[in-house]
Structures are given as structure tokens and as C-alpha cells.
Image (tube, rainbow over all chains, first blue to last red; front, side, top):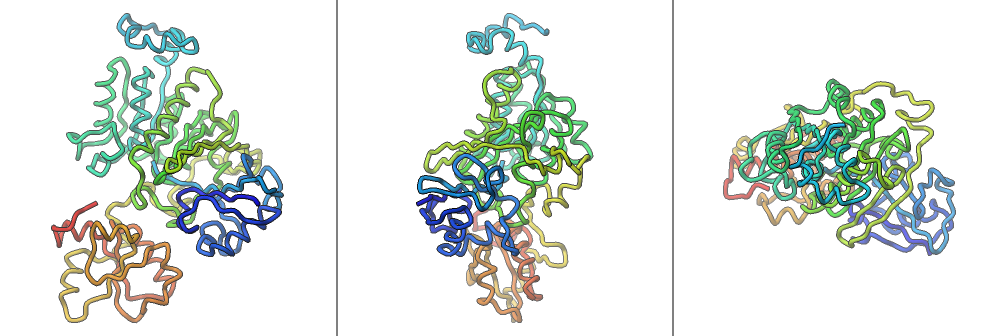
Length: 90
Length: 383
């Protein structure tokens, strides 16, 4: 089953976990599973129209899904989907 | 090529012994220049290491003064500099570390009006800012001037670092076309940061800057480094140019600097004395007298629960800002309410949310519980 990983910023909406294991054959499936299991994270990833927010990047392993097949990028059991929001502290 | 004195040769001997640096490399560093934007958590280690390494000219841009909450991580400053200008404090420290270099202290906010002129004088830009408007500004300046932008950013236990260099790879906007909506991603002033974290990320920025100036090694151009200090994990992801990038893509439509505060919907600096705007604010003494009156307002504390251990107002209802939208049903819009947080920034956002949900009898405590601790109940700590 693919793993989904979030940074500290978002773990508070995942019951303090930075990694969760989910089912799904595409990034879209994995995200759907994620918000179904952890509804509090929805607004931090999706805007009110249901699109992924523009400051959020999604990677499958080391590659941005923008450079792959977007939300339809397939994911296998050993893949890691990484959610990467912009942070601004300095 | 400017030569090194006998004293400098001795000082930099550990560099001269490295084949990748050597005498030629050290001369290159002496001739080179770097602009460090922000003299805070990241700017501290970056500027210290660049100075120690012998980068000949270092520019420091900041408009702020040193305060005691900076000292947990901003190691270029010291207790004797509290209340002094950050750029002057840092300049003094850097010259004490290495008097062979030139340090330009630019005591001003970095803005669309002065940014190109300031940055044009330096070989490399180092983004040590703490807010989105200045990050987008630093990126666009680097793209327009064709200079590398050595990026770092931090939050709590997490850090990111990369080198954005549009001539060779992606820029910051390629990765993050737009900032988050105001209030969704907290700043370090609101959410905190492990003091040593900027030391790690800033040191990586300094390393990348030195490698770029020396022209050695493989840089972070096209890669983003992710660091999780809590689990001690480093990860790297690939970054590619975004063909739709509005500033460095083939159809770029941003050709000059814009209004970055408007673009990001937030001011280009932290508001420690947070305000929601004069008509929505109340100050601590006014709230004190209202609380002692016949019809005291309800107090809504939008801080995180662990902050209540530091200071609290008796009787206040605690709903953290992140939960407010989902818990509006617990509030009575007919009742007068004063919203507060640590310094007034989060409560100003909470107030916006409440007003957009139909609440009208709400005020923001300007300066937050810290202002209350300063002006009303001095037994409470300020944090």
C-alpha cells in the first residue's frame, strides 16, 4: 500500500502522524482516502472548489506530479506520496 | 585578481589546503559578494559563515531591531545588542570575526522600490526572509537580474533548502506559483521554531552560496532538500522548470516587480503588535475597564492549548484559530466578544473569519495577551 508523508506543519491534522499508509491506485485515490480518514486536513490541501491549493506540491517519490501525470499519476505499493506546502519562516 | 595578504593566507590556510578551493578559490571568494536578505534565524549562520570564509563583500538588509525573543536562534546577535538595529549588530559581529571583508548594513525593508538597485551590486542573493511577500520579491529580483537565489525556509522542526537559478533551472515561483491564502500557514512568530533549525538550514545555504561562488561541486539547482529534525531525516526531491511560470517561463507575463503585499494578501513583515484595523481593535486598558463593567464581553482566546500554560485570561473560551471555522456553532453572534492571541495577528485573522460569518459585535485585542501583560497584568510573562 502506498505511503503518504506530510511535514510537521500538517501532521497536527493527521493525529500527529507524519506518515500514513493508504490504499489507492493513483494520487487522486490516495488523497481521497486521506481526507476521508482525516477530514481536518482537507482545507489545508484543497481549496473551496476542490482543487489542490497552489502552494501545495505533491510528489511521488522524488518527482513532482506536475511533471508526471498530475493527480492521475499511478502509485504502487512501495511508492511514497509527499505533500509539500510552502513555509515561510526564516 | 586581488591578492591575499600574508595574514589572509594564514587565516584561510584550511581552505587553501583543499584542492577544490586553494589559493585561486580563496581569491575568488575575496572578490565575490553576497546579499543576505534578512538578518534573523537564517541570516545569522549564513552571514557568519560567509564572513568567516572570506567572502569579500557581504550586504545585509533588514529593517528590524534585535529583541530578546530573537536570541534563541539568531546567533549573530547578542544580549548587548537588544534594542539595536539588526544590521548594525550583525555588521559589528561579522567585522569582529573577519576585518578583511566589507559589510554593508542596509537598514531598510527590502521593497519593490529599492530591491533591484540593492541586489544589482552583489553576485548572489540569499533568501533569509521570514514572510511570503519578501520571498516572492527576492525570487523575482534574482530572476530579473539573472542571479542565483539561495533559498531556505523553516517551521518548527522542518526545513527546506534549494538554489533557485532561472538561467539553469527552476525559480521559486516554478515550485510555488502562489502563496498560501493569508492565515493558512503560520509564521515562526505564530507557530514557533526549534532554535537550532535555522543553524542547520542556514549552514546549508552558506555551503551552497560558497560552492556557487567558487564554481565547484553539484549545487541544489533543480533539487529541493527537505529536513525533518524531529525524526532526523533528510530527503531530496527533483525540481523542474514550470513551463507556465509567470516570471521565468516561455510565456512569462510578469516582467517587472509587482506589489508583493497585495499579491500575498499580507504585509511583508511580522506584526508583533497585531491589529485588525482601528475600527476593529480594542486595547488592553480599555478591555480591562470593560471587563470590570456591568456587561463584560465574552473573551475568545484563539491560541494553541499549550500556549495557555504560559499565560491565560480567566474565563476565556479557547478555540485555536485552526479550529474556529468548524466550531462557530459554539459562539453566540448576539453577544459582544473580544478575540485575542499572543500578539494580535492570529486574532485579527479570527476576527476576519468571524465577520465574514456574520458576527458584528467583535473586537480584536491589539497586541494580544502580550499587550495585556505589558499594560494591565504585569505578573503575566511576555513571550
